[in-house]
Amino acid sequence: MPALANKTYFNYGGQGPLPTPSLEAITSTWQRIQELGPFTTEVWPLVEATMAALRQRLAGWLGVPADQLAFTENVTSGCVLPLWGLPWRPGDQLLVSDCEHPGVVAACRELARRQGLELHTLVVRDLLEGPEATAAALMARLEAALTPASRLVVLSHLLWNTGQVMPIDRVAARLGAHPRRPWLLVDAAQSLGSIPVATAAAAADIYACTGHKWCCGPEGLGVVALSRRLLAEAQPTLIGWRSLGQEGSAESDFHADARRFEVATSCLPLFAGLNRSLELLEAEGNAEQRLQRSRSLAAELWQRLGDMPGVVPLLKVPPPAGLVSFTVAGQAPEAVVGGLGQRRIWLRSLDDPHCLRACTHVTSTADDLDLLMAALAEQLAVT
Image 1: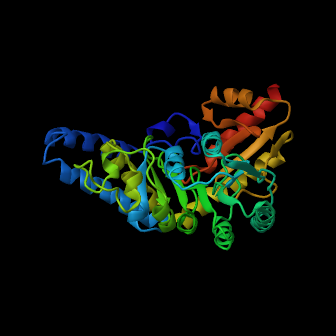
Image 2: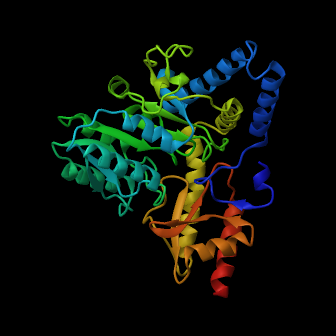
Image 3: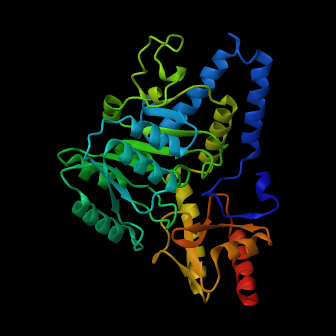
């Protein structure tokens, strides 16, 4: 990873560094396309094989059949395109957690405005205890928030701001028992590549991921897993030739599977790059083994931050994954980020809650933590 050669990096939740083999896969695929001709009969076997290989690999990661996967550009489009294609009725209620990304919240707000829907908030930001206490509190709040008009719940798997993991399978089971069976939309931007996702992806109706964060793939490529129920009820909203069962005919019906939510031309070399990044992660162990490594470092960082005067981790227990959020007394998060950046140590600030966030990955090391803690101590001493 060239990006790790001259810096200490804790921003995997924003964008993961691209490994050299993945960059080579991208460039070699681009070169091969040009050798074959970008629009010739000889290039199509390469296009089809490259996309099929990634679709099949992601199906294994997500624990769903390949025909339930649609490729997207990013998490937001993976959430919004199927969401807007669902049949809505005025008065339907959307229950959106208070830890969702602003892009998804804005899409839900606009959907509610256009369709005459009601937007309600599910409070999860203050759930800072261990997994059992968190799950119990969440389920109680969900029970209290559901009404006969509930039609959708929006809840991230791994919360991008607090670092808490939500029990998606339990939420899905409860919604399945509701008379209207509200759909479950899961923003999995922080999940794929950082925690096991198969159980949650199979339980949700919309489970939208990106490859450029914890998977350390190229930006501009994501995937969404869609339930059979959603595929039976939702129609495409942004339509192109890849949405069609017969791509050469405007008279064609849409694909019967998740491909109806794919639109048009994608950058094929990105598929080769992400596939290579996933292969490299698989070589580091299975999803649970990789989680154990990143979570162990996160727990150590959480402990050391909590022992430092003036520093307060958001979670009251060691993080369930590799995402550690914290505050520093008397210093704006942006100032801390700037000071650490001058030392070639990179983490990020968040607006809501206003805090700092550091991410540990399977590529992170104990030395990385030492450098961060030493630099943070120096910055606190100066101020």
